[in-house]
Image 1 (cartoon, rainbow, N blue to C red):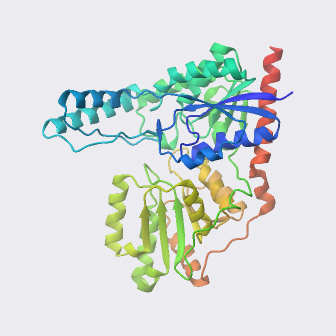
Image 2 (image 1 turned 60 degrees about the vertical axis):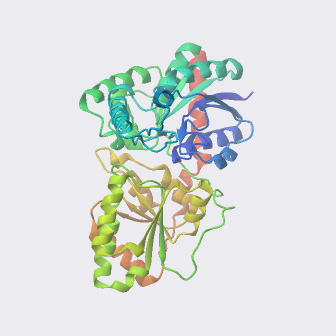
Length: 459
């Protein structure tokens, strides 16, 4: 008899972010192992960016339950517009996952400016003092309501909540408590102490750690994507035998049907597929290229770095200053976010793929999901990262080159070797990389989930 799992995942198609792939691939491979899968996620358009083409990725047979994300700010803006009968704009803040932007008209001055300031103030207050642990907190109520409906009709044996968003864990905990179904917490990033959440003030770190311990106390198993993260969670949440490491993974055939987007007889093309934001910047690249072309101006046309996914304004400002300072604009190309299908074509057609890992206190345990997508694309990887789990995989897997943040000299040496040889080239260690094939990883997940179900039925 098949077993049933309900996965709580705000990041799920058509949400485009890399975080959607873990729950998506869980569904795909669990089905192959005899599981029936359902997913509880947000309504289409409630979380951005979206790519409707990714809806085709959802395996047949997966039941998707969607719950609305309330947007009180957007409602308030619309009411003010109606009252004034004149257009105003609304501001937005950057976050790990952002709610879909509302259309904005021309600002009303001076009243429009005052309203914009008020909205910006509300954004700040909401982000730092109200929406704890993250921007999807207001989704919890509707998600639990919809989740209980899903449980009543789908009757899962176990619930898995994957985070971020960390509100997913609150939902998984609440559904388990209300419905009496065991649940499993899956960490793609750490909740407290993560490098992308260093902005969280001390008082809130204390509050969130207490909340995390309370919520995770009821979890039957806790998963993380790297051994360092598993150790952090075990130490933080009380140890025991309920902690497991299940990395992200790749499917060897994932790019088989992709037609590479290539440029014949052109410069060496290095593609970065993703956003530049927070402490994911990669300024070393501009400095290394700038110093190289200062000695050899002809190299300016011999290599080209292409970025697809958008850049945070402050980072873009610094990059523009560096490009102008070194006079190397022609060696760099920046594009807004592109559809996922084109992103894959760009990756497959690149000469090398650039990976920038967030730097910070816990960065040694970070293994970006993008690394595994790059594995599947099959092109050499240039990684800027603090030595740790990611650099270890790249080096042992023969996937490319790793450079510590700020190590301009080593980066220049790598670029020189490419230019001297004509193109980057690697010899992957297939025997080592087999452990990261998704079928193997999800087989281990199935064993963990089955153990949770058996233990629950015995208790």
